[in-house]
Amino acid sequence: MKEFDIISIGGGSGGIATMNRAGEHGARAAVIEEKQLGGTCVNKGCVPKKIMWYGAQIAEAIRDYGPDYGFTFEQTNFDFATLRKNREAYIDRARSSFDGSFKRNGVEYIQGRARFVDAHTVEVNGETIKAKHIVIATGAHAYIPDLPGADLGETSDDVFAWEELPKSVAIIGAGYIAVELAGVLHALGVKTDLFVRHDRPLRKFDSYIVDGLMEEMDKQGLPLHPQKVPVRLTKEENGQIRVYFEDQTSFVADHVIWATGRKPNVQDLHLEAAGVTLNEKGFIAVDEYQNTVVPGIYALGDVTGEKELTPVAIKAGRTLSERLFNGKTDAKMDYSTIPTVVFSHPAIGTVGLTQEEAEKQYGKEAIKVYTSSFASMYSAVTQHRQLAKFKLITAGPEETVVGLHGLGYGVDEMIQGFAVAIKMGATKADFDATVAIHPTGSEEFVTMR
Image (cartoon, rainbow, N blue to C red; front, side):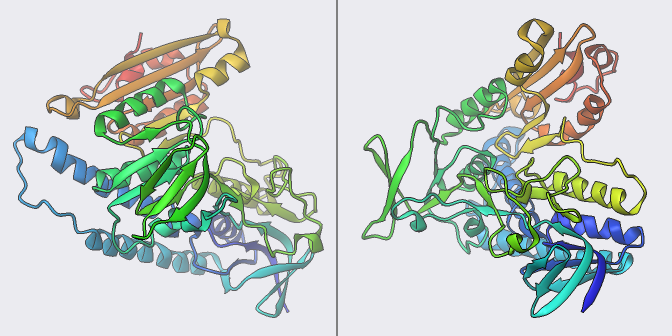
């Protein structure tokens, strides 16, 4: 029987980061992973998505912007096989890096499926493993609605396994995964339609920014279908998939993609053997220190349903290891003011509260809002002018910046630095006192009046 100080059930970004940090501090640590190291992000999420997004950006540059900069291109065909091959090669290199980090930090990698035997014991491949601390970092999987014919649809996992692009696709969902896939596939030449249950996508994002994205989608010819609730799917004689909606309409496409949320990977872990409980949504219940209800068992990342972003899982895991093995007994993840980017076309970047959230938290009379809207310089010299929209939200007499939101070319690379400033409590006066870098899009954030 093997014994460790700490083990992670799950070898995604959160589990790996937790064990590596524990190993740095001398703990005997192990990662247990049934499938491929790297989890959703590396294998079927952020990494392949971002590479596809870069490809889509290049396609847009060639098609929409290059001609007005004086460039003409003879190639008219896009070879998806080349992009796919190079994308997978990059992912292979990313996965191979984990071996090096494990060796440096003395972390053992065990391939197999772990199941709880009791609060300090798991069984893997018929072998018993004990640990003082056990971290559940099993992630989540795409949710497919319980509808007739729903299995005719696919998920983002399937999209990244495609060997060739379809001619048409219907994407059902309103979150960032739906929006990102729609933008990428549309830019790469796939006839793409996006169907959302309510009046708009990205309903948790600031409405000023989402309005701008919807305007851009319309200009780009990417149809958005609001108030569409699917009820069943059927297969046509020609192999296409037909989606039927509550309003008695239907739509046909080569592929239908479900992007309707994600569910935690908790099945077959035998959580009951350890006494671990779930919350009302089916995620593992944890407190602010990542503790479950069982002492010595923790959970982090998507399996907890808390800010389902890779850097959040990594930060939460490293913070946990600092608390357990480096004497920082009060260390806990700060889930406020987390920056995020939606890799839409153009990208959205955000940190802090939306205007709606700020008004609810501070009251309308206590907040002040600054906005700016213009065509990005990159696109302004072409016939395809792309909208940029920026917004600052401040609160209190000192006008502390509590929300920063942007839409436009390059926004994805602007947000990180502003996140540091907001985390430190920067005020509008601090922004005003900062010299702008000109000409850039990011200068808007420090010049708004």
